[in-house]
Length: 354
Image 1: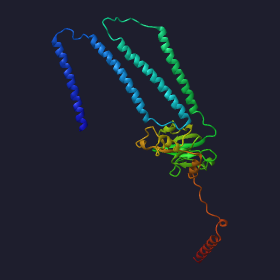
Image 2 (image 1 turned 120 degrees about the vertical axis):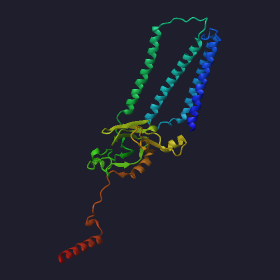
Image 3 (image 1 turned 90 degrees about the vertical axis):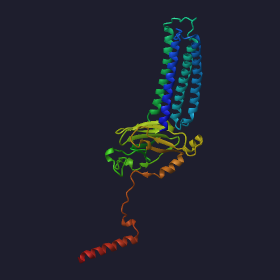
């Protein structure tokens, strides 16, 4: 109700201003001086000064807001390639900022300098091919340089993972992630969606020898300074494996295996000191609108020291727990074997009496 009243007041105020302006126009028309449409040199000077004020206040406001917005940015990148992408982004920002400031100064400065005066006569200057050539060539060279460097950076980031990388699968489904770590063989067991059951939610092939030492986790732990090779799958719809603090992202597409690789460089404990936030945690998000509970699809990410990672890894469960087989008589205590023999003898006597 309060919002509705505010809007009614604003609309009425606008209508009042419009009507007042119209009344002033009618008064001027009734004055009959015959020069109501003539713009004076005083008006031009006033508008020219307004352009300069708009330039100064506009640029000042833009610079202030840009500096103030830094507090909303992510902290420093926690991956090797993230440092490069951040530097590339800031290079683009610097270039765009310089060009923006120059063009705005020229736009509003020329608006003031060449404001209309009765003593001035416009100079007819239809074209200048040499000027057009240079203002086309210079931006073209700069853009080609940015594109070439960007493509090289992209190819380095998306290239094959190093051979010594740790292999991990990230499996997405509505609305959570699961991580599967390759064992000591650094090979993941085969998986297929038709093998998915309540007990085998990733559809891993139990008969594949490579799956025997695979481990499953509900958190993604990453050893620092270790190349990671992330294989990505989706059960249902398109998700996205997004690690904002590592500047890494790749879509999870049903029926496809996508991948990304990176090297984490800052542990969780170190980042808590850098951000001065003892509760800081890395996170993996889905930034595709994948359903009604999309907002809840995330996974905690921990970047560990090698020692802490080994300790955590030992505590994780195998995808397929070893089945317990019945002990043989040789492996059983003597009393247990004797007791089983007596039970069998008594059972035979009961059957014989019947």
